[in-house]
Amino acid sequence: MARSSATFSKREKEKKRRQKQQEKQARKEERKANASGGGLDNMMAYVDENGVITDTPPDPSNKIEVDAEEIVLGIPKKEEEDVPAERTGRIDFFDTSKGFGFINEDGTPERYFVHISGMIDEVGENDKVVFEIEKGPKGLNAVRVKKA
Image (cartoon, rainbow, N blue to C red; front, side, top):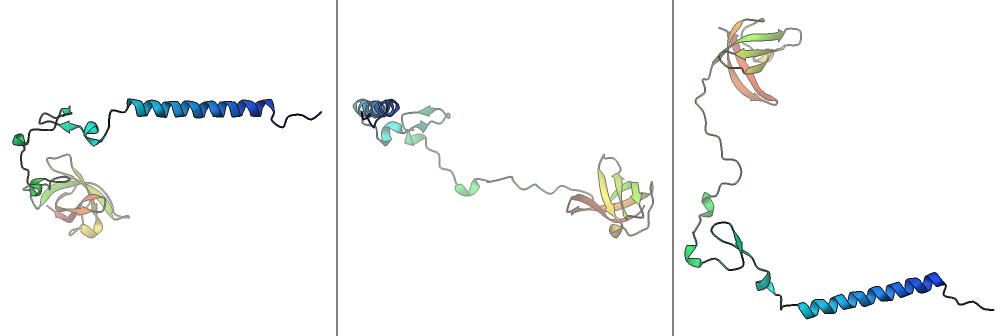
């Protein structure tokens, strides 16, 4: 006897596939029936002068003109402070074999890196010094360091 070429599982899969197609078609027809005309106007939302989202357009008489040139994008530039050119401090640490150290500024908790190439006078630890500050690759560095 010859058996059917379609097995039970194949018939079940085919039946499920047809049922899914019918459900999908029913949902599609339901969406078409419930469509209210749609369009861009029904989807549009507006923000009023108080920042509240509404479905009515704002009143054109309340419109404020803004000059695009006045809008600052990014961080505003920092204004220059009156910083003394020369600062005073004390050598906190200095390694003569490696040629670098740190200076604690007087009156502030600031600590600055100093390299031997930025020194005018030869200094040692705990010496009182006068120096200037310059921006280095890793932060502020003390330069033109001389004994006070």
